[in-house]
Every structure is written in C-alpha cells, then in structure tokens.
Image (cartoon, rainbow, N blue to C red):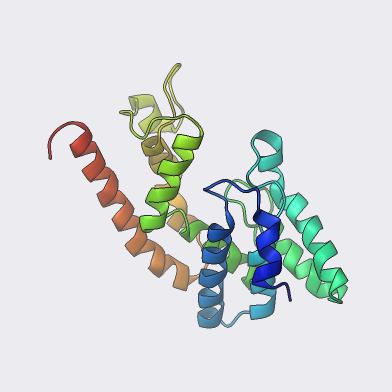
Length: 210
C-alpha cells in the first residue's frame, strides 16, 4: 500500500487547488464513505492517494487527460509493490472514472466512492476556498453578474468572463445530483447549503447591501 510519505512526493509541484492537502482530504473522505458503504478500503485508499498523481495541476490537454496518466502511474507503483493485476485494474478504473467531466463512468462501488469523495471537496467551506483560489489562479473574477443566456444555457455571451460565481452555477450546484452513494449525498446537502449561503452573502457585500 502506498504510504502518505511516499505519496507526498508525487504532488510536490501541484498548485494550491490540486495540492497534496486536497489528496489527503479526498483520502479521508473516501475512507469514511467506504466504511459506511461497505467497500474495499485498500482499493479506495490507494486510488485516493494516486488519483491526481500525474498532470492534475497542469493546464489544457494535460489537465483534461490527467486521469489516464495517473492510472498508468498507479499501475507502475502498485505493480512494484506486488499487487495482482485484478486489484491494480480496480484501482485504475477508480482513477480513470473520478473526473466530473470525464468519459468513463464509475461502475464499481469503490470507483463511485472516489468520485463522490473528490466532488465533496468542491462543496462547503473547502469548496469556497477552492473555487475562489481557482479563479485567482486563472486570473478570473470572483463575481460577475451572469447573463440571462448563461443562466438559461450555461454558456456565456461573447466577452462574458467565467467567474467563480459562474462556476458555482454551472458546476458546483449540480455536483450533488451526480453523486452515487447515499452517504456522500447526505454530506453534500449540508455543504451545498453552506456554499449557496456564501455566494448570497458575497453578492450582497459586493453590491454594498451588507
């Protein structure tokens, strides 16, 4: 089993949004859900530690395909530890299927748990920090009033920036609906309410109303 100390080196160059603290939060949450749902803890823990190990902090195509690079890296690490092919494949599937915008659906309970744990990290207080942090890294604004077209279709009009609030409306508010486990959905509901309250407060303060 990969150790925390070993895994830390895989994320040495990660940015503040995809750093090792994110990985540790996902690992802890994935183990919590796995225990509640009766999943294979070893598969879940290994997948959580390795899910962003290659390319997650890169932009463009590397970021979009990081789940495949991380799955291949995971196979190398686990094979070197003597894992059998079936269990390596199980971890790889978890990693390949963890992306919200990915094209491989999580078919096993362990893969569903990693997906859910990774998505819970975009909600609640951590979600606030991450969406604001990501906007800052991308030189995007925290808040811009969304156009009517964006509200109706999720697509900006020409020249409309994709602010942190846009990301909240476009993705974060819909994450819970995509979750697979009842344990995660229960946690997500409280975190989503916190996130909604934050943006309501942000907009009021932005407009000088509080």
